[in-house]
Amino acid sequence: MAKLIYGMLTSLDGYTEDEHGDFGWGAPEDEAVHSYINELASSVGTYLYGRRMYETMVYWETAHTIPDQPQFIRDWARQWQAAEKIVYSKTLAEPRSARTRIEREFDPDAVRRLKADTQHDITVDGPELAAQAIRTGLVDEFQMIVCPVVVGSGKVTTPCY
Image (cartoon, rainbow, N blue to C red; front, top):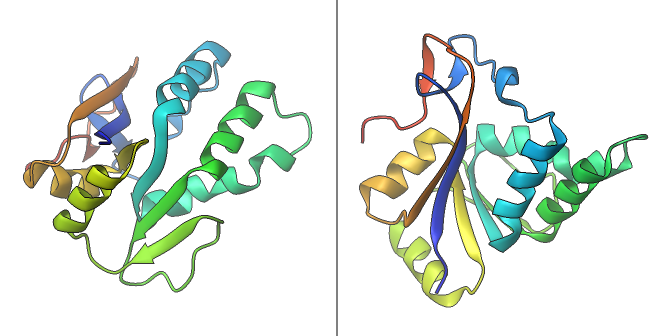
């Protein structure tokens, strides 16, 4: 049985992005930090995304082709590409990455079945989608990486659910 993990980069004051939607302050550019994230994600076989998070993460579908990428970036890109992706969106017409399917609604029972039938862990990414999973008791583990920055306002990491 798989675990459902909610993992996010968060500011010291609990935000995933600022009031303008910027989250560049949380991009792990340090090799040690990124390698740690790669290690955390090594057990993951499926990512659950909302549309906005998916549109951010789809960068990794081709990141390994960008010249002069460090090895730890290429490693993460390959990990991401190898995993299944489920995108919950009412508006996204087609996926822009391999191993990706679109679901129109978040279905807690379907996620329970996925957890029961899967050996590799699953992550739910993005605070709004995670709130739905938390509310239905699906999240087994939290992996918050706290960035040394105070954002002040914006989208909270753990919205009220």
